[in-house]
Image (spheres, rainbow, N blue to C red):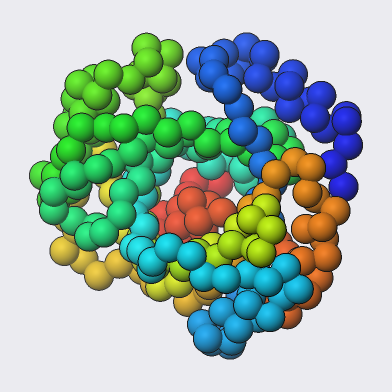
Amino acid sequence: MITEGIIGQVKDLTRSNKFHFLDREHNFRYERKFTVPDEFSLNTIEQSIKRNKALFRKVFHLRQVNNIYFDTAAYNDYLDNVLGVSDRKKIRIRWYGDTFGEIKKPVLEIKIKKGYVGDKWSYKLKPFVLDNNFNNDMIQNIFNSSKLPLPILESVKMVSPTLLNSYLRKYFLSANNKFRITLDDKLLYYKIDKRLNNFNFIPTKDANKIVELKYGLSDDKMANTISTQFPFRLNKNSKYINGINTIKQFPK
């Protein structure tokens, strides 16, 4: 259950030097993630969500989600996650629809994590084309031309593309509108390089399905009740970490 101590830590984070460039309103929330084994069919998972006592209903339409993740040359963000660093970040570009070709509505997202709670800041980017000519110089030009706040622009100059992924996502909302669930399926991981790329290779498939429960800071107690009704286990899951572990031979 959320405590005043955790809320205080979150407020301290917003004032810390580590995240000084995030000088804006914050919307911290919880995210509980469940990795569902391949033995559970998509229909079984969906029915489990709808039978929950929180009375989840399907909202919005099925979408394909695409992400390009960024990291430092030393993979600092990857290592922060693997090592369990409490205060960490993740940088990505997200868009919906086709993975390749002209990306008309890309959004730069910076996800901030403070222990069990997190927030996300989004910035619209200029359109670009994702094909075999894609490289870091090109995307840095997009950043430079997209009117990003200067501190954000300085931050993305320090990173380069490390992973491309895509998946299909379904959306659910509880009857009281306080809890959201996303269900991700058909995960694909693509290698991406900052200089030379060839996306003609077959991507690596991930047979697992991911369920995420998202809610505000004051609703953690009820979230426990919701979570215990699912036939799958809560665990630590990151598509970025899974993808890097899948497609790269990470140096030890």
